[in-house]
Image 1 (tube, one colour):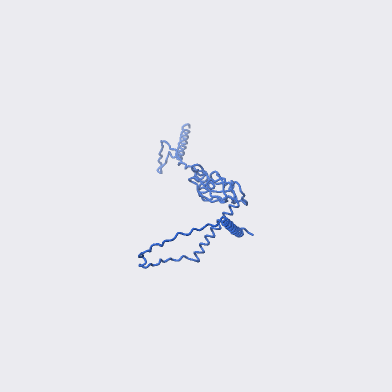
Image 2 (cartoon, one colour):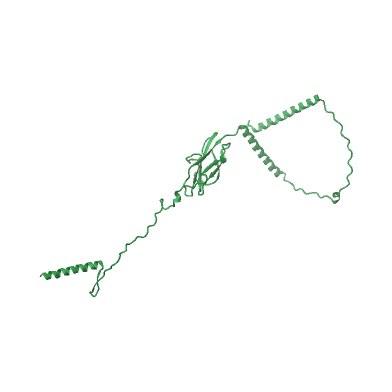
Amino acid sequence: MVQGHRKFLALTIASIILILGGLFGFIRISQAGDISLEVNVGIVEEETSPPEEPAPPAGGGMPSAWFMPPKAPEGGFRILINNGAEYTDGLIVNLTLVGGPDTARMAVSNNPEFTGPGSTGQITYQSQYNWDICRGRTICPEGKYTVYAKFFTPWGTASEVVSDSIIYREKPILERIRQKIVEIAERITILKNQVTRLLFPPEKIVPEEIPPEEIIPKEVPPPEEVSPPEKITPPSKEVSKVGLIEVIKEFGKWLWQKITNFWQKILPR
């Protein structure tokens, strides 16, 4: 009986080995009923994952240069009003803007916040730019005015704010009147020349043909002797003095009349 239990235990162990071998693949049973044992001996290589691609920079894959400020030129970003002049008598000035090698755009403003009608917003970079220091203001009295500027890369990153100042001073009234008179006189001269050319066009001058006999030089008679002029006695001192005073009086009357007529035409009545 003990021997029967041993056989049963052996069959049970063999069945378990066959089942496990079939599951794990080291025991195979052919169609003919043959049993074969396969044992793979070797080093099991660990599966390696493909190398990870470098993570894109922050901002959804944009290059890091997009977040870098513009490169400053030698001496730094600068703005000059009228080449650094201290005073101006006009509200329109010329700006000199010094940007860097990657400067693509700029902004000019009459206020440090770069807001309102007194600012351009981002515009194409220009090294020379005409600017109205009264832009965005209702009144522009005499005094100090400051202009601000910023420089941008092609991706819109701004530089620090730079500025320059100038003092606005109006010309004296006599100087402005004189300048206005000169301008009016120049315009009148230009208009006069244009009208003259329209009414009297220049004619082509045809050179006259000289007969050949007139080209031959003729004998010139000797010059006649001229007697010396008679000496004229100067008038007396009293007569000369009276005549000079009269001349000065007449000249003064004429000059005063001219000045009166001129101002009546210029000044409103």
